[in-house]
Length: 169
Image (cartoon, rainbow, N blue to C red):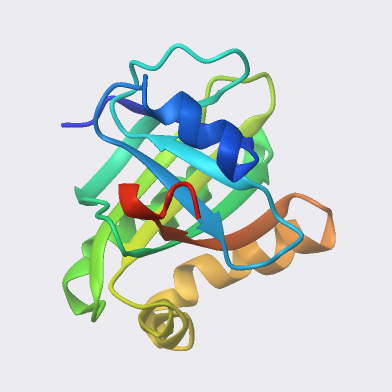
């Protein structure tokens, strides 16, 4: 079981150099959008980085693999919302078997004064995620994406997990 995972953001070249020294499994992720930074994803939770964002794993299913599309959904929520939020996340994980093309899903909570969660999901193709997002299975999350987005507490972005042969491209 994964206890924690860490993320580090930067240029592809910088992260490629860091990942060579990182514990396994670690991945280099290239963003779908050109205005986003590349991300090092350390699923071991044992990395020693100068400025990581560390998440303690609350729930997990499956794994992340090279070539996958990874979708990250960041939620900043209040103490009053947290119980409802985790209840809705439990519903998302309970329905995991109906998500076509999903290879992994992780809910992490940052060790921070502000309540920050990251739902990281891994898919065979980006279209698999966006198809799921339009189904009733996504309903438990929709209220939080809408509510948090209106107050600046929600962000989402997608990445491709690069194979080591693609790190220096």
